Amino acid sequence: MAGFLVPIREYSQQTLAAVQFALELHKRTGARQHFLFITSATPVSEVAAPSGNEINSVRKIIEDLLAREILENGKYLKNHHRIGEFFETVRDVVQQKHIDEIIMAVPSESDPRYPKISQDIAVLMQMTHCRVLTIHPKKGS
Image 1: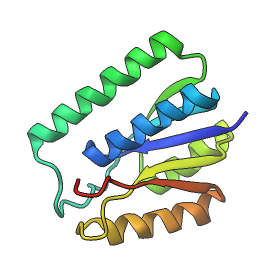
Image 2 (image 1 turned 180 degrees about the horizontal axis):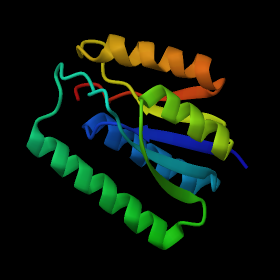
Image 3 (image 1 turned 45 degrees about the horizontal axis):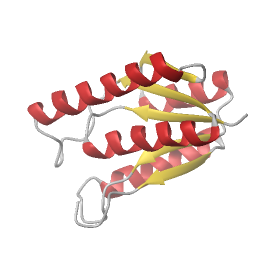
């Protein structure tokens, strides 16, 4: 059975989209889904970062959504909380949990965070030897 990982290092609409996609994939395929909440010593880029209210709102939505899904159908849904650097933490969980694919949200190309996130995906692919499934925002979002 395939294993998927959704690394969560920021609470944004893009992250919420990745979580929702992973949960839908789980419902359709029964694949193992791991949600990795990373608290990093190095802050995420503040360029065009969500506001404090948006962060708290999205965080609550993600936490509530995962709690409900785990309660209802959580046999293959797991949450992990780690403190550390993003790349090393993701690599370690990929190895420990035998992850096949990473699911990440990518903002639109016009978003100032796009080049950094694209670079992060390339580094993750090299470090983990996993495929990375990118979730893009809908047009007009």
